[in-house]
Length: 439
Image (cartoon, rainbow, N blue to C red; front, top):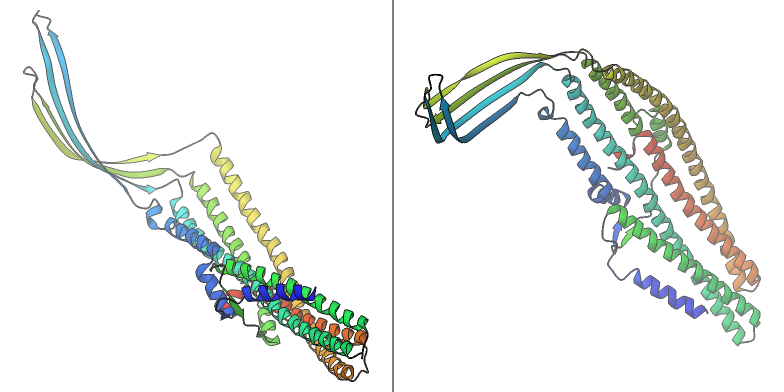
């Protein structure tokens, strides 16, 4: 049974290491993600659309200029009869008409609220920048979670390998003692069971690590076959840095900044609705050219050419449009009020999240320090037990208990370290500082 597990582990570990591996730090992972992540790329494209929409070319501030031309031929038969009794017919008379016109119109006063629409397009572009920022922040936070899960599982794998090595040495020692009659078969079987148990744990962790690395490659949008050695050296922000960030409150939070933009936009929408009560006053002008040729011998003229300029002012005023403007203005006022209420609700929620994230991170840092002390205690205890085990003063059960205590202490300390780093990242996300710290 033990040999089967060992073969499986060797094959699995070999498959995970057949390609050259580069070291991956959190900074380099963030860089790869910002360059390659597809969600970020899509959001950047939406931002470009918003930028295009905010251009003066999309504002109705520029005049409309049109150029038109027409050429047509009219062939008809004419039958004529005068009051004096003269009559006659003309068969297949042809008239050729050619014309061209250049026209221009420009609204001096525009009831569509172009001034506020133009401002709104600028604010929508600014909002799209914040939306991209929020997507980047969420993606970086997701990257942190997966990256440090890979780091935790990598450490766990090494810890379990070391524990398996200890169990193998114990099994080999008991097997040798059994051959020389210095122990019984039960001790050998117990040692073999422990080797198999440690082998299963290592195999399960290796599988989880394999899946987590695939998740990491997916977020960074690199080849799923890519292999990285995670840099497990972690540095935490100082207590003073945490306090300084907490003192800034939530006013750099992207979600809050987006809602503030929504308030500005809803205010502009209300002004746009009010603009519908204004008239539209415009200037119009055109230059036209026309030529007409016909072969009717009795026509007053056979060819005429005309050209000239025309200009004027037009005004349109919707006095009453079945009450739609009244409803639009009322709804715009309600939407503006809702935007203000949404901001108040969001501020309360974000303040609560920030306080929770702050306290959670402080608790996780404290737990990490406790786990470090606990690890030192269990390591000293195991070192004493291993020496006593060699001279037969400790039973296999006691030795195994000390081994498992050390194993659990190592795993708990490793888990606490990465949990503290993830809670730090979430705290930075809520405070709006995560991009500036890691971009």
